[in-house]
Length: 309
Ligand code: CP
Image (cartoon, rainbow, N blue to C red; front, side):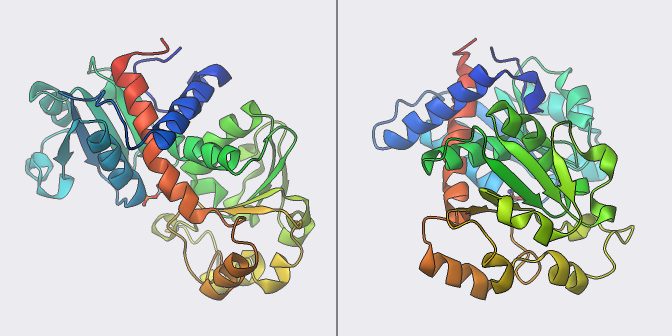
């Protein structure tokens, strides 16, 4: 059921994703009494783009299962002396890595370098392509909150064009029976990007009251070189979640964001705190982060130990 690598979710059937989620739930429930299933394994973390949540939760996941972390830091590596990425991954394998977890800005790069290796290659986010572990931890978090995704409407708001999280959800959410609505300015949501079966709007007020889940995406300031939005203030005014827009949400709507949040753009602190005070169970940002550890434990365990195959 599991291939050697995890780059994108389109390669996996629902049963494989459900097995990951079941295993994550097992790890979360039994976290005081874990079998060190990665004992003796060396897992290389190689992040070529900044990360807090993904990198550290993978690191913690490896340690909780008794594995060893090998941290490759591009900024102090021989990349600065001309080492190619092919050479880097082969070097990591030669020094004893049993799996690689990679983040890189270039879409498509994982597919080519993973072919050089006989060990699992797991994406920690690949350019604007996909971020499969984020989509899985989101679904885990929703299921944990008691929600059955079948027939539920997810309203995803923001920088769709640059979002690897959105692209993983284009596969994952329909597989679990959810319906998807995308909301963004036209420059951040080209119609050809909208997956079959999803709907889209350019005005937030047209969609927001239909959402069972409101999923905010980060405006990727680092990928705005072409001037996709005239100004962040204008984006915040048209697409930011403020008190007025919050009042339009369904009474039980859940609020998610993959992080990091651009405070004052997608949402501001006052609104987060106000929402947390009134509806503490409905704002899931921290639950998403916490569950990232257990979902990544499950992925490492299944891909390295070959269970479920
Ligand atoms: N959600 C996410 O990928 O966060 P980081 O960039 O901090 O890993």
